[in-house]
Image (cartoon, rainbow, N blue to C red; front, side, top):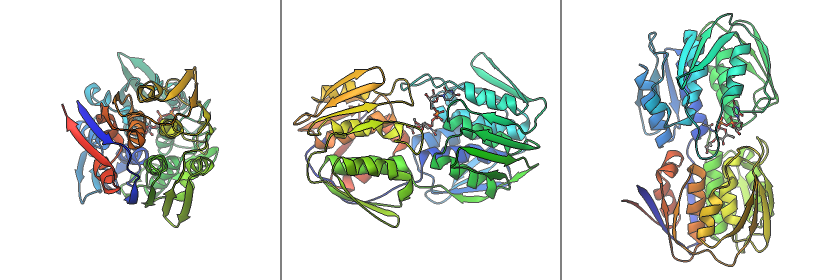
Length: 418
Ligand code: EPZ
C-alpha cells in the first residue's frame, strides 16, 4: 500500500505551477474518440486516472502516445471497438464518459458500468435519459450499458440535476446527431466549457456552455485537433488551502482566477490574504482560520471537490464551522480520519459541525477518496508530529508530482510503499 508521511509544523513558502485539469483532460480524451484523424491534447497531467484512461482507450483500439511531457497524441481507427473492458472501467469512474463518444461515433456502444465509489452510488440515470431523448435505445445488462441508435435526432432535454458527466455525455452524442438539441439545467463547470471549446475546434456547433442552456446543431463529422487543457481549479484550491493551514506564503502559477473564485471567497472569509495578478494567485495566512459556513453546490457554487480540504482547515479554526455537502450522498467520511488526528467534528446526515481545536496530532490515517486523501495531507502539514496517509494511491490519481510540488514548497513529505 502506498503511504505518504508528512511531518507537520512547517509553513509552506514559494511557488507552485498548477497542472492541467484532471476533470477536463479525462473528458477531452474521451471526446477525441468522436474525431476522425489525429487529436493532440496539450497540458495533460501525468496522473494515474489519465494513465488508466490511456490503457482503456488502447484496449478498444485507439492509438494513444505521450509526445513531450504533457502532450498526448490520439488517433482513432475506423474499427474502434464499441465495448469497454470491465477490469479497466471499474478503476476509473470517468470511463463512463466513453458512452457519449463511442455511441456518437459508431451508433452503438457497450460501456461497462463504472460502479460506485466511496463518495456515493454514482448512478447514470440522467445520462441514459438524455441519450434516450436523442433517439438512442439503452438498456443495462450484466453490468453493461448497451446503447444503439434507433432514430437519432436532436431533442429538447431537461436535466433533473446539473450532472457534470451527464451533461458531457449528452453533449458529445448530440454533436453528431442530426438536428438541433437544447439541453436545459446543464452543469456549468469550467470543464464543460473546455469540452465545448474542444468539440467546436473539432467542427461541432455548441453554444451556451457555462450557462444553464446549451444549444447544439448536429454535424456529420468531427476532425482531430490540437487543443490545450485548462488548469486544474481543484488542484489550485488544494494548494491554496495548504498555504492557509500552514500559515505560509505561496504563489500559484498557471491559474484561471475566475475558476477558483468560490474557493478564493471562502479562504478570504477565513482570514487568508489572497492577491490575484494575471494567471498567478498569492496566498498568505498569519493567524488561525476564522470559522465559516460552507454549502457545496454545482458550479459556480462552492465545489464539492474542495469540501474535504476545507474541513481540514476549519478543524483548526478559532470557532465552530458548519459544512453541508449537497452534491454527493456520502462525502463526509474524511471527518472520521480527521477525528483520529484530534479534530472535533460531528456528522449528522449531509452536515458536519466542525468545532475548531487548538492543535491536531500526527497519526496513521487512510484516504477514502482522492480529495479526502488531499485533505489529510493538508491536515498533516499543520499537525504536531508525523501523519501517515495510507491508500495514498488515491492522491496520485489526481495530483501530478504531488510529493515534489509540496517538497519544493518546504513541506517535509516522504512517499513510502509497504
Ligand atoms: C464529476 O463527477 C467529477 N469527475 C467529480 O470529481 C465531481 O465531484 C463531480 O463531477 C461534481 O462536480 C469528473 O469530472 C471525472 P455528477 P460526475 O454527475 O460527473 C448524481 C474528483 O474528485 N447523479 O455531477 O460523476 C450523483 O450521484 C471527482 O475529481 C445522478 O443522480 O458527477 C451525484 O450525487 C469526484 N444521476 C450528483 O449527481 C446521474 O445520472 C453529481 O454527480 C448522474 C449523477
